[in-house]
Image: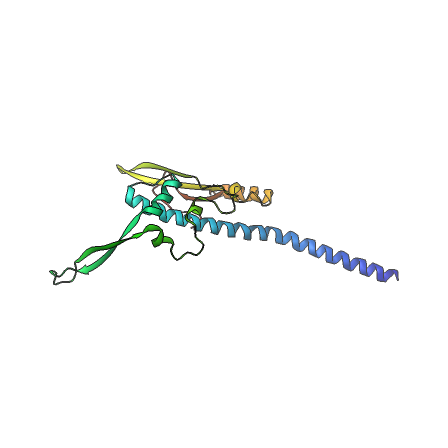
Length: 199
């Protein structure tokens, strides 16, 4: 009787220890999976911002640090629809004539195929409890030419605040140790680049 109870007790202990071991192994894996998922969502939002800012710069010769200005531009701005036709006076067919046939709203051009897309959400960092992206813009001298630059940085604390604090601190330290920004970053105020550190 005692040996049966001991076997049952040992079986329960083995199952519990197995579960604890499995949970301890899976906790960092689940953490990293969630970080990757959130990083991907923020990177996609930043790509949308980069596209919008690139268009804004084409029309205004500089980026804007204001989401209100950017969103207003997206809502009211129009892109010309250009038709290219061969030049009838060119027998080599190497020249063409660009003919503007109309205009299309920028928002329709960029986001018409996106379901549930709200242009106002462009400013909001996913998983941040409503915090907005902070855009910084400037002009820098590159070979005697003033170039418009933009930078957006999102520290881990902005969008991982509800996750295991020690894991977040460890992740940030690992990034700093390899000279990477501890979070997500797009663009630079010292280089003429709109690249993201996730690319």
